[in-house]
Image 1 (cartoon, rainbow, N blue to C red):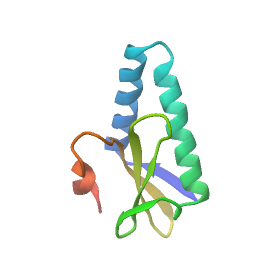
Image 2: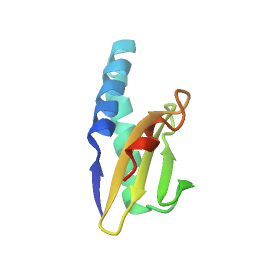
Image 3: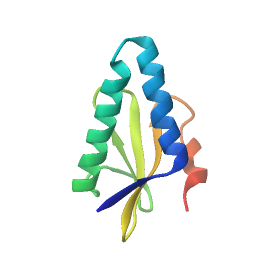
Length: 97
């Protein structure tokens, strides 16, 4: 199934990578790799993670306090947010279709 990241989700991913790279060399790359692995798991098993309402779900990263918030549609998986789990909960809700 095709995966598409909304522009704000793409920006969040880039910002988190930059933040972690500033914290420690290559840590941002580790974050990016873990985020992409989560997206691959979502692609393989789209209904396996915690429902947040409707067709929206969250797959938590294993090592970092982030979750990939996504919606499964008939044609694709839409990543709504790459959200830090301890900041502004549910800020991404306005991005839903």
